[in-house]
Length: 352
Ligand SMILES: [Zn+2]
Image 1 (tube, rainbow, N blue to C red):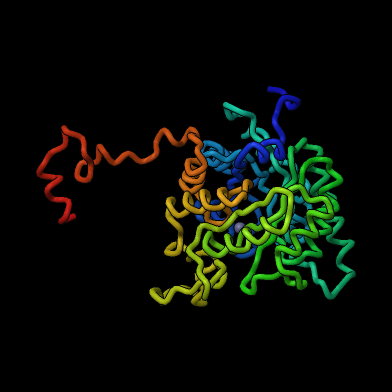
Image 2 (image 1 turned 60 degrees about the horizontal axis):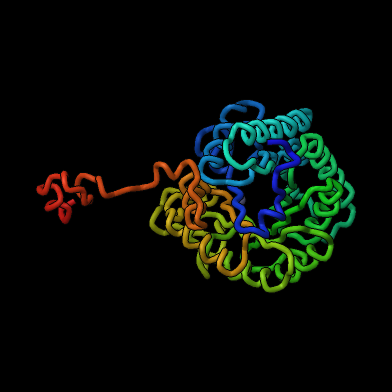
């Protein structure tokens, strides 16, 4: 199908839910292709096949958006690892991989997203960094436009000021722009606004979709996403991390694991969060609840795996290709109900 016939992001959001599977950094770290710490997506150049395969798995699980893996592939991160010369090849390759993965998929054409993010150099007390940050976004958005993306995702901002620069640059692309904040423990932005107020300002400045991604799990992102939903007229995004955060430890960075005494620095974030991982049903319940209150742009951030995404899709009434293998316990040898199963195994279930 040609690009002309493809439904755009906003049309799809008006009609229902749109899913964006994220979490490439954490998943590729777990798989042994990316180093925690700097978290730079060098895998895009080192193992492009591995990145494409993860795109395929998220597409298969129901993601409507294929997000080019340029998160933390910006100039500041490339400088940090001494590889600024690879900045442009990495970005262009990530965009090409995402596009190729999207074009392989059958069914309704997928949306390919360019991605910009928090720079980690923004400082609301230092206006001098603004020009540097703007030029970082301009180069990345320029490569995304060259690649013909369908939208730009600008994400994980702790500051409204930084998000505003990203929005201004991303809007020049001419495609819809999604802007989301990462909300840390205090529940506000680092430059002062509550997130609902900040999102309204983004909407007024032209953002097409506003909301939250990363940092918070389903339980602690939803109350804030709800406030955003009430504050704005545009579509709202909620893209939590799949971890069991709560009131005392509302972010994945703040989680503590008293059951384990062998974690270096005693901080589970970012590579010992395993015991906090949400099961798929928790993700499904989150998706259904968020959609019911009018949040149509949904996804899962750091920690996401295909089974989470599939459950999200199914909770939203979808039947993605991966649903072919969704659980069917009726034929389980002990817990199943199939008439041909052996009774002695079913009688033994209480002892398993
Ligand atoms: Zn994340």
